[in-house]
Amino acid sequence: MKKNKTLIGVLIAIGIVVFLVVAVFVYFIISDIKQEEKLQTEINDITTLMSKENIDYTEIDKRLNRTVTKGDCAKTEEAAKEYLKDVITEIKTITNILEDDQLTNILTASNYKADGPNFTKSKSYVASTKTSLIEATKKYNELLTDDKIISYINRKKVDSYYVDLYKNDLIGTVDKEEANINKEITQITDILNLYEEVLNFLVKNKSSWTIENEQIVFNTDEQVNEYNKLISKIG
Image (cartoon, rainbow, N blue to C red; front, top):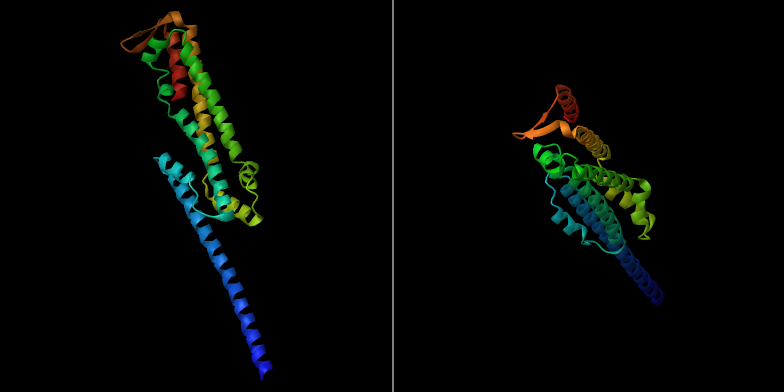
């Protein structure tokens, strides 16, 4: 009888141990799932903010500079946010170039009067803008390569599960819009090239034009036609 009681006691003890082990295992699984859900929600919120017409960079920076998860999930979050920071930096640079008011004022009568007839400042500005745009585009496109994307998570030394989570579920949610952005950049670069053509034409013919009543006036119809032809290419 004592043997039976002893056996039952051992079985109960084993059962309790097994239950505790399972309970701890389940706890950590549930905890990890909650961490991943929190992380995915955080990244989704950031990408939603990035996709708005009027981007609130202050709110985005606030989210990018905080950590809402723990453990290896936190390392994965840090990698994703470091990557997004670099992407946003290049997007800001490109956007600032494209939206610069000075760019739209190059071919105006006021600029012709202020910087003509040699257009030293204007030509320098167009050249530097092209260089900045090319450099920013190069950096942006590099960020979209698989090697560059994966380098951010590789720094964190996490196991393959979190690498896949980072690449497929987090960064995979980012709408990179590579083709659209490159198309816009190509269009702006073409316009800058045309700006240079117009400025060079004006410099070449600097003794043959004046500004009257906020309008450029040429000495010959041939020059008028050539100037209008260049301007029409810009659209």
